[in-house]
Length: 626
View 1 (cartoon, rainbow, N blue to C red):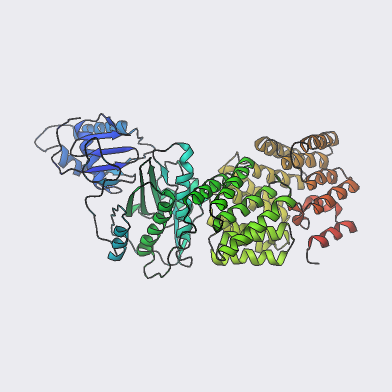
View 2 (cartoon, rainbow, N blue to C red):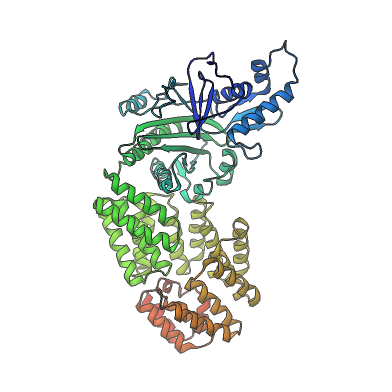
């Protein structure tokens, strides 16, 4: 690459870890210069000038290959593009930066920031944009952003009007550009905050896909159009975060799925003195911008930040990061972070709601006894609602505690319904409502709620697997098997779906297939009492009593190291035909308020006990309507 100054005015482009200094004719990666010849560099500039738009081969010919110079244009262009991709470590099959549009040209597909001229020693992270490509739709918004000291660049292109009906949007995980993996919680937290803020803008007109489905695309090479079609959305919001000791730069851009047009983009450049306040601030500003872009005439506005404590917010983000892993270790760690969040700010409602969620799942996963964990969850949920009565997560968490511990069926349904009323796009509220309806035997209503949860979170493996479990509890075993197999096609290594598939085979008398699937579930889960007990039950039902009793001994040994839910032991005794032992362990499960007691009415495994008056008495005490 030549070191002569470029004839154009001084401009700097930034994308990913790369930076292009046009005047200095330099491509840098993480501040280090990357060798690139003149023609590939010129092509890169042309692409960066029009991110997301097609740059035709004819345009490049006219610009870079003069008509009076004889050259094999196709060979020369292909060679230059290959050199450019080599410098960017890009791939034509899975492009992160330069996409080939067959027989037409090329398109730059990554988010691009245009900065001012670099200062000595390279470009400052805080350099301000040198121009706006188009004026804002509302000058008041621009004035507000300027007053906040935010560095902004927008580019708007003509687009179709928003689709009729409810607009669907997905917020893809913000890329963590230059921090280590230990800082992923920050970019994940920004994604979650952005999702939460946007979901509250105007729920009647804008539906936001759940973060778990969007998280599926964190490191994908798929294009925005393909992602959008898979998620069933109209628009995608994507962005990046670059954070160092002194500066914080956040970029965001809106893409229309139908034609992959980049409609709007913003860059925020701030001193990293209070990064979590900035995170909330940026989420609210993007929300206001998208209100103008997608929801003209809407009077809704994002809610104010629930805390002014950066330490509390940081602890909360770390807690959600761990909680979303849905592992025993992650849930245990999340409790510590949520506790830290409410210590830093006792009035921080989301911190209390997070604590409620963590305790609820620790009980539901059998990690902690319900008698210890669920009352804490209920107390935390009630405290969150005292602080913020409009917090959907807290209503849903309260509903779960009322259901599985208090056996207050009506109160639980009211809480779930209130959560859905506040936030119609909160998948967990629909999921937990479906759980209650399923437990009551209201299977048609339960299926509708489960389908709604899946629509809101279409890439959630657990929600897909639960559809199979729903059909299992409704005694439609063939449909249960079909649903489970569809989930396995998505992710063969997801353990819970093998569990549900095994149970469905077992009820059809397909013992060999059932045991094979339940062994897979156990191997994938590891030392999990639930999966071990399920396998023991299958051994017993299949007549392999020696192996079933070996599982009982294994569970006894495991109970010395960790909590063991009594109803799991009851399952094996039911399979062995040992009624007295089965009822003894079910009584213990009732006394300990084991979570799965609310499934007694519909669980097929307990069918051999239903003719016993003691079972009817258990159903009455758990509160099932007669």
